[in-house]
Image 1 (cartoon, rainbow, N blue to C red):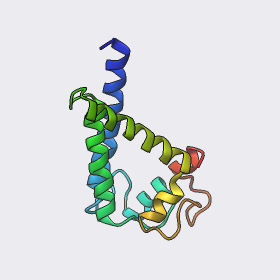
Image 2 (cartoon, rainbow, N blue to C red):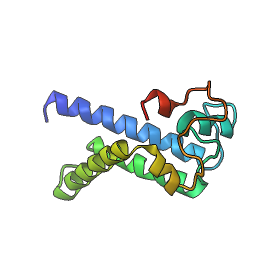
Image 3 (cartoon, one colour):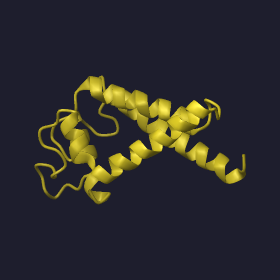
Length: 129
């Protein structure tokens, strides 16, 4: 494996696993790094509601497994390579569709249209969604 592939795998794996760990921590009730759950929901999703615990944990688990696969820790077999490609396509699809559909699927009634306080920018708005 060349150096670019190795660095790319390390960055992708670390990023996905980190985001997965945050989702897993959020599922049972952590509001880190925000002061409370409502603030976290507004900052991350632009919604005053937090998605239910089970879907949040499921997303976290999938991201963590995706991080392990993206890092190449599951080898380079055909099935793992296909899984990495499917993960990439899935993440690209999520980016193209935006967060509104994802939040609707997770049960949020008020997806990414800003918080109750229009002067509070959300991460989603800063990212251009």
